[in-house]
Image (cartoon, rainbow, N blue to C red; front, side, top):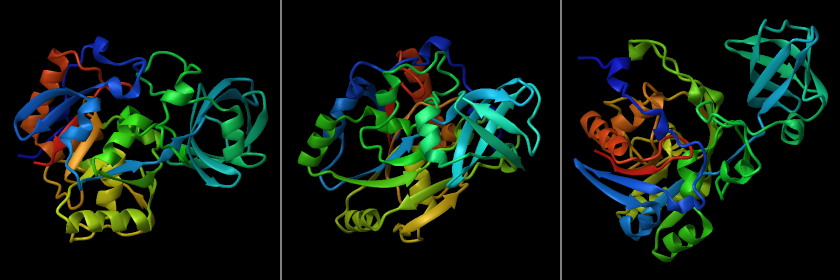
Length: 340
């Protein structure tokens, strides 16, 4: 029987949604799911839950100040969320306004510069900025907190909504499983003989888009850019050779590795784009263990973790997490999941 959107729905009390980060990154709780067994731990236990010779792969993308407020030629208010920078002075963006802007018009953003509307591209608009887009976005834009965080970004979010290993600018949302790591924890992992490698996947605004079709085979994923460095491919090959496990830190890392997968579990080096949609029945070739936060009902990310852990197992884990007061979504707690 084919799975439908309703199979991935669950009731989440609003008070379970974390609205702010904990004081310390690694102080979050960690629900360990191995087969049918659940174990309540804390994130600082992670080094003891992994085995020397395992390899942690992390997404080193950095979140842009991708949210810009402004007004159209007509004076109407407008909100721009940059999806990606496509050329030095051009971006693809979501635009919210009472009336859609017209090609050839301009938008005044943050009372600082004018952007020209070049046209539509599906659900996005192509905009041309007057100079280097990345620099204008970083100088004048705002940090784009997820829509379920019901407050404006504060100064503390500038640090806490970035991972400590963020390097490559390009995301509109944080790879949130990585937010639990701090420098002392990374040092303990290295001391235990656990390898650390990086990929880059620039998270698009589509990550927050709900699935709108009942039949999952009709859903089309948004595209995201990724890079797998040579050093990471070599680290994965060496881990496989010594019998270690590949541990993906976050669904973005998992999507990158499985998009770049060869049949033998190695990965292709280089840049690419992925629109991979992982649902139960997917054959995982690279990732053995997943660290991830708790995901929204009816979301593609919930479908991904159900594919990795098993439908019944994820349902039981989420019931347990809600009953036990775990904190959900970007600033929430985490799970450590063995592949079924």
